Length: 215
Image 1 (cartoon, rainbow, N blue to C red):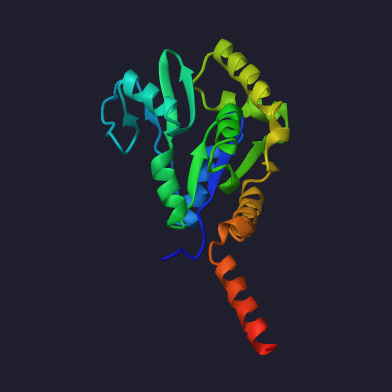
Image 2 (tube, rainbow, N blue to C red; image 1 turned 90 degrees about the vertical axis):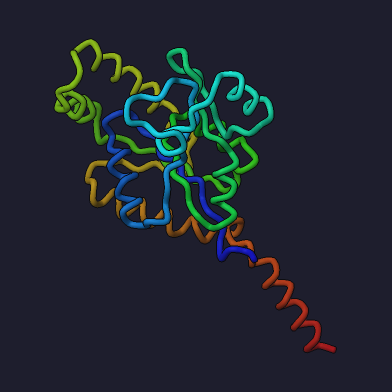
């Protein structure tokens, strides 16, 4: 039986400190059916991490095999380890009408949009109100040395430079207002024609009814 609608692959990207994580968690509080995509990685589990919950922990040959066979929506090599998003669980969620959230950078977003599931993708980029405010947010965390913050700022600008490749771009100058806009976008995108698998059958029914009435 067809689901009422197909799920969305909701990609949220932003420079560090722009509010992406907070907005993602608000989305999940708003709709409990939303879930984060569980990534695969070749790094060893850290204390307290569970396989299949925090990550799918894979050996390097197994990870590479999934990439070769096209079973990764996106993948990257970061600091000596591989990371990626397995396609199977996401495909299953979409067909059952459940949306999946992705926290990836612009390169991961591009790979997902170019995948077999690209037509079900909704990509949203979150911009900070200013560079000054972005730096203030990073400094206020009190976790990083000045040189680390400088590197984060450079990486943030590299990320911002790709804002034009996203479906929607939101300036997060007010968290509540930005979240309201995000809700509106997700609600509307759920009604896109490709997300409604029953439409074709309904139109065929209308056609049959029309032809019958004109006999």
